[in-house]
Structure formats: C-alpha cells, structure tokens
Length: 393
Ligand SMILES: Cc1ncc(COP(=O)(O)O)c(C=O)c1O
Image (tube, rainbow, N blue to C red; front, side):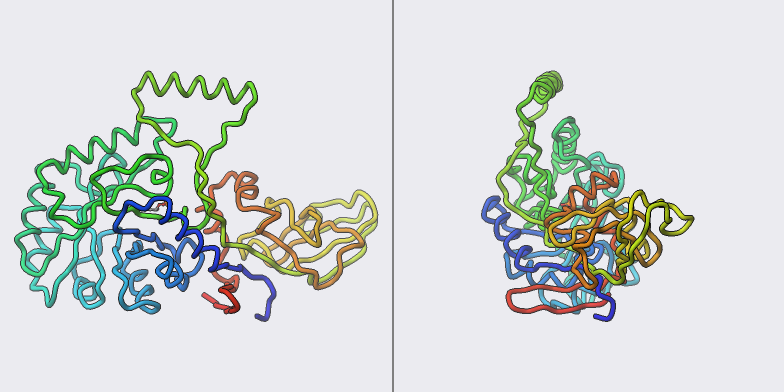
C-alpha cells in the first residue's frame, strides 16, 4: 500500500454474522446472499467467506456482476436480479447463472431461443413497489405455463421485493397479500425457491410459511434493524400512538427489537501525514474556510472527497480521542488536534469509535449509501484469521 488510507474488511466478522443469521432464522433451505454493487462495496472477494458460513446462493444486479462472481467461485448459483438482454443468454447458461424474468414478451422470445443447455429462471412478481415484476395475474399464469413446458428451461424460483420493512406501515401486509393473489394459480411445491423477505423483513416478521428462501443483504454486513423504543415518557407516547395505528389498520405483528449480534465488518483508517502548529486567527483550507480560535495543531490526513470523505463526517479518532475535521479537499482532510498527536499516528475514519451509524446520522444517509460513498480508489485490506490481503478495485 503506497498511500496509507484503506478500508479494512474483517472477514471473520462477516463469517460470524452469516452464521448467527442462519442459526437464528434456521427454517430456510436457501440463504441467498445479496452481493450486488461489489458486495455493498465490501469487495466481491468476500463471497467465499459468506459461502463458507452457509450462504448457498448469491444474487447480483447484472451479468457483469455475475461474471465477476465467477472469477472467485465457479460453482455457487448466482441469480441476476435485473432482466438481461436475450443476446447474452448463452453466457448465463455457460456460467450457471440464473436469470430473472418479469415481462411476457421477454419470456415469449426467451422460449423461442434454442438453448444449448439448461437455463435456470426465477419469475419476479411486482407486489406493489412498481419497479420490476409482473403485476397482472393472467400474465403470471401464462408465463408460468410457458416456462414449464419449454425444453431446457428450469423454473427454479419465484420472488418479489418488499419496499418497506412493514413496521410503521401497512405495505408489508399489502404486498404479501398481493403476492399471494398474483401467484394463486401456481403450484408452489413445483418451484424449489420461493423468496420474499430481505434483511429487515427477515428480522421484523415471522417466517412466511410458503417461502423456502430469503435474500440477505445489509444484515450480513452488520445491520440488524433492531429499533429500541426507550423507556421515557416520549417513548411511551410514541409506542401508544403506534399501537393505535396498528389496531386501526389491522397491521400484522412485527418484531421491533432483536438480539441478533451482527457487527459491521467495514472500517476505514488512514494516518497522520503532516502536522503543523497554528496560531490563533490563522486560517486553514480552501477558501480560508476555518479560522483558528486558539493556538494548536493541524494534522493533515491523506483522505478527502475523492475517497468519499468530507468534513461533514465531522470527527476522526486518533489515540483514544476524537478530533474535529475543520477543512477538506479532494485528497486531504485537515483536523484540529493537540500535542498528543504525532506524525504517522493511525487515524480511524469509520470504525469502533466513529461508527457507521453515527456517521450516517450526521450525513442524513443510510448504511447502504454510506458504503457507496467510499470510493474504489481506497485500497481494501481483508483480514481473515492470520491473513491480511490488500486488493485494489
Ligand atoms: C431485489 C432485491 N432483493 C434483496 C435486496 C437486499 O436488500 P437488503 O440489503 O435490505 O437485505 C435488494 C437490495 O437492494 C434487492 O434489490
């Protein structure tokens, strides 16, 4: 590593997370690890850790991502969550890649192709999100029948995507009801993988008895969606209001808190590249944006908005103390420190002290978006048992 700014992915944590999820929610046959977008920016390399821990199917967004998976694992089945152009179907067949179908014309054309070997297909149902999927019952039935009778096509799965976790709303119930209605004419016992839940619905609802699989994304990366209600008067009032809403709209029971001890495996570190003394009234950074209030020190950290980090992150952590980021630039942050900080000290940007949740709250983003912020130019270092491997994406 030439520039000592890196994301550390702790594969032991990922392995423990997956094992804990499978142990707690142990009624599924298919644990589909959602690893789109370079495994939520953790790096696709981690798939083998997830697989060792019990994930037995993967899901990605595109054929490019599926082929990337194949560089690391030849055997694990991979589902592409978005439809792909029919001209690339042979690539799927040749690489054991499963496709999603969600449109009648597409399926008619697919079934006319002379396939060189078996192609696995999952039908996507639109139960209300209006993003992808079939929303007409007759079409669902027609597609089902067409796929079933087409040589070399194996209808392996059927699924939908839930737009909310169904905690303070009735959309979860509505979507489940709509899904059931749309697939009424289908014999689910003939389809091995029926998958509806995603991370947050997995932890917040009882298992749906007709599902055999679950798609797990953010929960594998350390977020259990547990919401604490607190004990004060305000919390009690909120709870009362919620209960009234639930009663009024006949919302199914949800599990608010859980003891699933998953942890983020994604940490980001840098070091003190330069250090200077500054006096009261000196200014720091572009546009002289920060004016020094009293004599002190500025530490320069080789990490900036080209890496995805801005001064809105607010603090970094060095040697047991938090220090304020007072200015930023494309490649460097300037941090107000004291005499305890020395050149080359390790700087935590995201980790056990400056947590993802804290930064997300400050930036008004969720964890999916925060992972996305951190750019691929930041080297990933993989920690696994005694091994440490650097990867540049
Ligand atoms: C179709 C689909 N399924 C599952 C997931 C995983 O969601 P989560 O990270 O909430 O588990 C996603 C994520 O965007 C998705 O688009």
